[in-house]
Image (cartoon, rainbow over all chains, first blue to last red; front, top):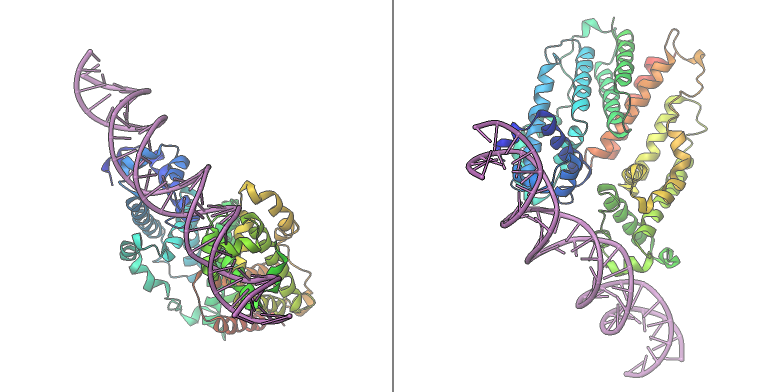
Length: 201
Length: 201
DNA sequence: TTTCTCATTGACCGAATCGGTTAATACCAT
DNA sequence: ATGGTATTAACCGATTCGGTCAATGAGAAA
């Protein structure tokens, strides 16, 4: 890709990124037209081809960017060193909402890329997401100290419960159109507190 | 549509239905090619146009069919007259898995249709899904008899919890590729029992 | 076999769309 | 004016699309 892309004002860079995320999220790779991306970004198709040599380059650039941004957002929140499972989940969702404010279709784009099968990009696509394919199957519950939970509580089921409900929240955020994000956060916080009262000693 | 479609052996009808569901679920209306649907159904494009005059007719037929099938599946299970909230949820998920066995992409198709904006079909599309648009915003909890639940339990939060977790299950079923459906049902049953022990007196 | 019926198809058409190129602009500082 | 850079309109060849139609195939009836 053309290094001059980074000289553009950040707002314009983001417009292009978001246009790409959105189009590639709604269509398969082959059926995502460059002209549609350009139109949505508010630039001409020619300019888009000026910054990115071809569609494949733009696609892989978007994927690499999504990966980097996600990683930086997650490490930004203290969601990893948090020892409280509930607060960890909360921080995770907080990070995701922050991302969705700035890049509304990025996660949908990443999810679709995960299943993209077009041979034109598949090979180099895998190299980027490969580290995460193993990680995703890691549904095993983190180490939980039984002492702090109520006696006789099935920790595995509890974790299933909060994990799936959180997944359900994310799902609603993505598929239920544009909604009041701050409202979602407040609701989720309520749920977290409900769980803590319910499951913690 | 051509009434002779119903004369086809049921297996062939379903192949065509499922091919349509899949293609229209993965692409927008405009970018769903008839030839791709025919290929996936194992018939020629000409034959597809013999049974359905044009793309619009096929699309609306699929939508109407999806609506009817869903309604019949839901009324098939006793999920409405069930008074136990947990068993109601369980029956609901059971019905959905049954559907996904026979029509794997139907619900994904219906969801995408819900947000389809193409003016060629939007008008008549709305007429079909309009009754459900109001119903979907109905997140209010059903009438719950507080007596059977543990004292001091926040019923609204409990319902949020189980509703979202169930949503999370559905999400996993649709987006996590082909998985062992019976395994999913067993896991969900476990979760239901966990909730009953947790929330019921 | 011949004939009739009807499901099914390959070949085709005009129009639109696609990825990508290029030569020309608009803009702005010197 | 001049030079350089950001940006675009116009264009191209190839492909794809929705849809049509004449022809083929298969099976039952004669």
